[in-house]
Length: 111
Image (cartoon, rainbow, N blue to C red; front, top):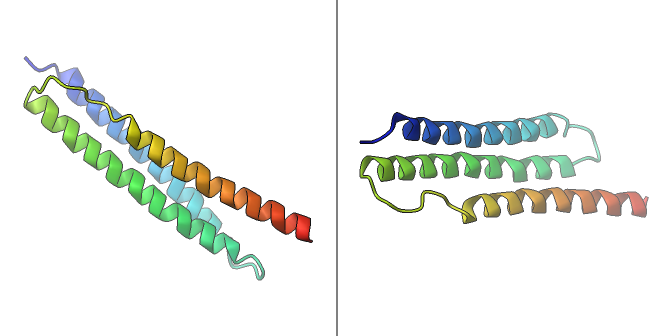
């Protein structure tokens, strides 16, 4: 027998990942809307780097949701987690934030 709570846990995890993607894309949209200031062209590059990452979050969430749903339906007794996906996505976000931070630090030191 398949427990309904397994399906709900899968959906809940999917919604959590989508929530992070929406927050990240909202931040990117906010940065992009403030990029019209002359001399602040770096903001467009920063926002355009965050938007594909948020899309990757959405695609990753969909992939894992469908994969887990298939595992649940077929009652496959295996690990249902993916330890590398969150690590890779988190590392990319940290890398983009670090590049932005050090770019701004360099601009302040140069001025």
